Length: 396
Image (tube, rainbow, N blue to C red; front, side, top):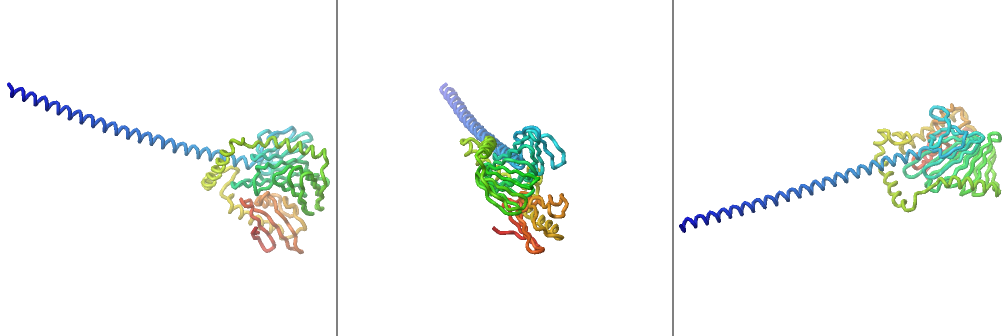
């Protein structure tokens, strides 16, 4: 009896030990399973955050890329901000004429025309603006932009008048030129008017803010605020003072354009500037690929990088040299080459290779010698000189 009881007791103890071992095994298995699941969850969470981070970076790059392309596209046109009828635009691309519309973009060689009552206000992304006055023919010759911040703008006033205000945000190194058939007004960060009268072949420049250089075949003068410059034909330009009523009127024009120059709020500037730098850097890195697929704005392509633009300026000067073979004129109109016996299309093709689509200077030397200077459309506006012996770069 005692032996049977002892056996039963041992069996019960063995069962309990077995159950305990099983429980320990199960507990260990559950702990290991839970740990595996926790590791898997951590891994999945890590992968999820990694996918989210990669997606966010990709979206940020796409956003910067799209916004950068949008900004550069805006830099390469003049934009119609407002107008008063009647005014129209003759498109250079197809020679078609269409009425002026708000938010219309004007490209290279588009011509805006106003009648006796018409006006048009053109704006640019940096806050600059041009007020085209009544009875005016005003051609957009060049609106160019480089990622180093350099802007070059050139316009041709066939007749009539414009008031131009160049924003303080225009940038360093660039320049705005307004040419007429007999003179050129060059400015940076200023407010001024330019008038051209074809009957007298005379250009008048009036300055209300900062300085403007007026140049014609007779020489060059620097105009300061409150001064008026007159250039008749190729006679040396003259300076006189603006009277009080005229100053008041020009100040009104200046304030009118200044209202359209709205800088970003001060609180956003520390954020906006790094974004703009990142966009320029990204476009610079991706530029070769973007050029190949043709998504760079303004029709940029592989021929429009700095090296190619300098090479283009060299070739256009060589083309110009061919036009000087038969006759070397006393003077050349820097922005039309009108004195050369070349077809109009060839003259435009030559000028398109230079900054502002014009020559920088021309001087006849002796009976058949000449010195022509022109700047390339690269980011440095590299200066080249043409003589009867060939083309060379002019070092600063």
